[in-house]
Amino acid sequence: MNSLNRRGFLRTGLLSATFLVSPAAVALAKTSSLSDVGKLMNADDTVTIYSAREIVTLDPSRPTATSVAVVNNHILACGTLEDVKAIVGGQPYEMDTTFKDKVIVPGFIAQHAHPLLAALSMSSEILSIEDWELPTGTVPAVKDKTDFMQRLGAAEEKLDTPEGVLFSWGYHAAFYGPLTRSDLDKISTTRPVIIWMRSCHEFVLNTFALAQAGVTQDLMDGWTATAQEQSSYSDGHFWEQGMFSVLANIAPMVADPDKFREGALVMRDYMHSKGITFGNEPGGILAKPVQDMVNSVMSSPSMPFRWSFMPDGKTLVEMYEDDAQVIAETEKLASWYGGMTHSTKGAVKLFADGAIYSLAMQVRDPFIGDYHGEWMMDEDLFERAFRVYWNAGYQLHIHVNGDAGLDRVLNSLEANLRRNPRYDHRTTIIHFAVSAADQVDRIKQLGAIVSANPYYVTALADKYSETGLGPERADQMARLGDVERAGISYSLHSDMPMAPADPLFLMWCAVNRITSSGRVAGENQRISREGALSGVTLDAAYSLRLENERGSIEPGKLANFTILDANPLTVDAIKIKDVGVWGTVMEGQKFQVGTADGRKVLLDPTSPEVGSFEFSKAAIEHAIRSVHAHG
Ligand SMILES: [Zn+2]
Ligand SMILES: [Zn+2]
View 1: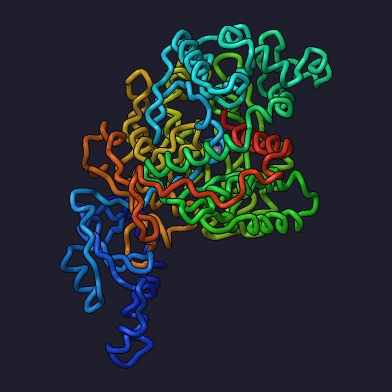
View 2: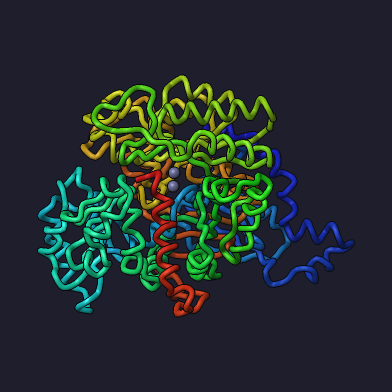
């Protein structure tokens, strides 16, 4: 099939790796007799053969199989049970039939998600526009404002301390109507009530929260003119620059380290329950105490997935005027990680234009309605960042949402390619909300690849057909059908919490393109299921330069599997999102959903640095910065 054939080239680099992990092959190369082989093997060398109802490999030379042999965290062989046993040969092995009724697919990869932001939102009282299926139970979508007020009131009654903060995330004024301080005063006048809107770009506070945070009209009169325009004391409402101005005041109430840690554990269990075996955050944290807190959960050996943090190139070029220092400081960040976390090597995130959720992207044709495109990086800074990292051989992941934003990105890419040609640069177009048909050819010609958020279509195509974009542009958002037909590598991402970090759900969005009203938006942009599966596995790995070790079930790669109840390539397309997840095998270890071993964390949660005001402020600032472009 087309989507697999175009990836055939990926295999070349793998063939040599195949034998490196076979203990028998290694041993035989070093010894003269078979009796020596046994001596060289240790307990870890025991082969495990998993049998399954079906294995979807994404290996074009053997697309399906029923058995896979694993040794030392790696895949030794894959095929029928007979094939696999023949390759295992005389090595000791054990059979594992746990998955005999299950379907094994390559381990899912969260190509682009924000764990800290996810932790913050998931540990709050979630009252949002969509259902959130958490390990602790499903939180159903809010129906309307009355429903919101009732559920917020119920949450208030459940709080066990009289002075504790009631912090909720997910309200969306376009869905439920305006929300103001007086609404929240009906919930409580004796404790802080803080609502973080679904876009993460706005807060609404009750009167008690304003007082406790020390926010007064006098204080606000001292803010910049724009911050004053983007806030309202009487409504207790703070957005955009107004939100940034109020952040320092409310940080300790919102970003409590204990809450964070609890949220990080929910985030961990949530992502694992969706079958994730590896993840990546573009725009990694630049405050060490905050990263330390994140590491206290995510670096732990008990984590069911590894995570890489891709440096935020935008902030680094802003911080350092000397080009060489930019690269030196970028590389230094690698020392901040360890265990199950690491720095994404040789890649940075840059930003072009503004947010999709608030219609702040740069578009070629005018918006319908009163919306304004924004640039996240001014052109000279963007050009400098592009050049500095390009010359240093970095892969660029570039946030871009509008077609005019994409023109800028492609112009810069072309100029840099002409000036300093690079092969296999894999410049990654991130989000890919609004684009034009002609840009797909250009992406292909310039050797760029795409990482799209297909949830935009599900969540926004109906609303943006009415306002903002109009039906043509709204329905052609995330133009993945064209990208697939052009043979461009693409991956799917959630940008969690911008969309649920649920790879099967993302596949469902991209394959069906069904909107919140139930209609199909842009049927021509639907993609194949094989392409969608590869978008959350092999092509996601490719976009992170990990395709030699992850993304498909092939000898030599890490033994990372997601274990499903049904095959997402053959199940009714409308049911892809409902396929059950048993759990994962991560680097040869089984992790069943709902059986995470305890709540181990590495660091002392009471460490003074972690508990400080600076910590809270830095944490919330990172969270906000990472969504500033998205909400
Ligand atoms: Zn982004
Ligand atoms: Zn993002």
